Length: 286
Image (tube, rainbow, N blue to C red):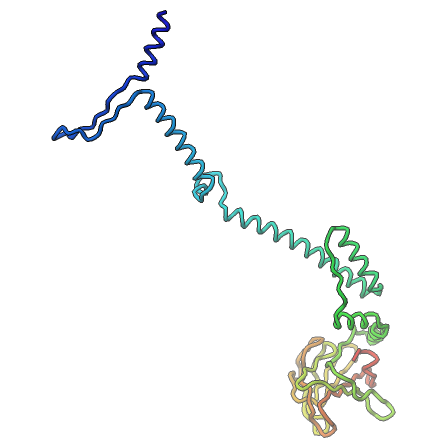
């Protein structure tokens, strides 16, 4: 019985009402009166603590303030990391495709059939789950295929090797209007090209002549290695001087119509080997 009375007293103690009065110190006027019990104060305290924890968690989880908390990564940094990861993955895929493309080009240049190389590359891409779109070749691709498959291109390279020099380059893009003819004394090929087209050195060497003559106009002659000499006549302007070193494919003059022997804008191109004139079309694909 005593124990039950003690429990009742404790419960009543928690429920007992207390008055909290706030007075004006000068006039003793009651400004605020609150009736509280220990149970109300405890309940309110627990609710306030839970509410504060909940609000703090929501603010940290859904606002930028979480970036100020140690251990949380910045959302901007995370976004950048994801973007970099995606870009890296894309670059790896592009790199693999480029490696297969270069490998295919090397195989084609070594003489393999183009269609078989394309099929091998397509099968490799399919094996790696890479989507491959084989569209019809463009005119440029078709021209490249014809050039690679043309046996004369490789025979020209072989004949250039007879001169102890690599493959010679065409000095200008155009149309051959007059071929090499030893019987008529025309020891050159005439190539018609567009106005102001650059004329390029067929091979590296040293400029040994850059001058003007009444018959051939602006003329430039280059001494190459192994007693090979190339001459370029009827130019409208010269870009190099005597003694200049020129690389293979470097611009040396501008197409023109200078000199008494010229009948229109064209290049008069000569090749000499060991002191004898040779047909440029036997060594260069013009």
